[in-house]
Length: 386
Image (cartoon, rainbow, N blue to C red; front, side, top):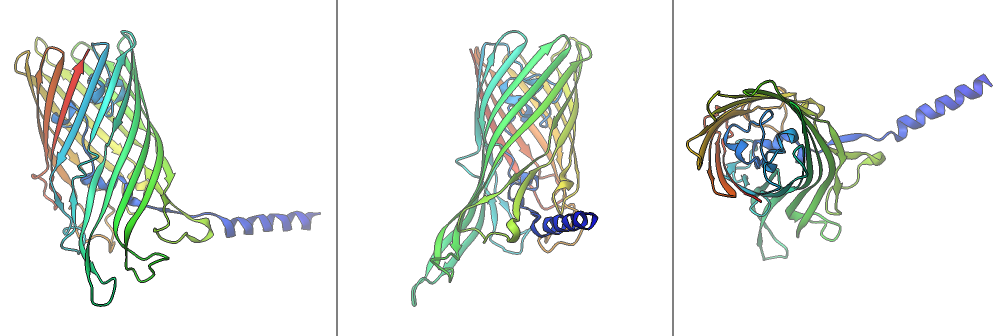
């Protein structure tokens, strides 16, 4: 009997080692691409250093901290769109004509907030929090002898995110929860080697996608009429990457590629000057990006201020970091030294207030950064309150 039990255990152990499924990181949708992909659809917060963990805002600020989602009117409609400059990618890879460009079709958001009562707000938001077009330049191929053709090769990467933010306030506390379902898509266009075109003479598209559920929790505590503190956390999510037939052949032993959204936590404060509407905000973030091979944990600082000029016009300014999360190791994929992807952003924004609406514009620029990555973003936000 003892021999039989040992034999069964040995079979189970050996079968587990033979058929165990391995996971490989697919970094197409990794936080690394935030160096360009982020659209900063944060409304008024975009102009004040992307701060807002401890401040109150409408539906436009729910992505920073769902507990900040608080509105005065019954309904709050918000529409946003972001424009970004072209980022040459030759500084990162050897190819001289590669570029990161605007994905014009998917760079915005639309959201509707509903005030159920004085304590409870609920909203529905469709957004493209991250998107870009990765241009690989033009490739010449020869479909038949004596003829040639040119193909523009690129990857169009974007996210369709559907979110339901909910916030509840009682006493000095605001609590918030944001539930999101995202469809992440990488639509690659170029020259492919397929079953029907084994010599690589077929022009076509190859699509990979990730379906992801995620959640974010948040809280704000008002210490006094002048000081608030807040915190937010987003748990880690891991999803399988799905490929179409034109992508690489299946991995052995049913191994899979996965996309990871690391867990992230942030804390912040807001100080409101007595007898004034001037506000100062500060946020600090930690992201567990070391869960992805080749990366280390990331820390970022956000600072911002808001200055009302009069009842019709408010200006904002701020600063925030976007640190380089790559590990300090040799990797043939990188042609730029460690820490060269770090960005330091200066922000400037303003809001014009109308009777039942407001129009906000925010400029975010990282050309003061010491490294090779330097970008400029312009976010516009329109809100209608009714």
